[in-house]
Length: 88
Image (cartoon, rainbow, N blue to C red; front, top):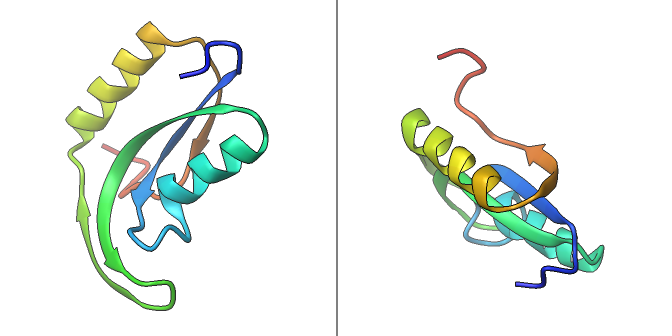
């Protein structure tokens, strides 16, 4: 990891085709010379043109992950994408 770049965190789902979610976010971060970090809120089964299924990551796991990353990195920005609900 390059400590000279600012850190950005993507909180999003995993699109295995790479067209969206944390894979796409980290590619975009890299293009802007930003070190990307990611927390997966969901795993999906999809292709570049069709969505099939989603399996959500538990809220507790996501929150524990967020706390650990913020404790260990000086995160300058956060991008939030797919989440199951704004309410717990």
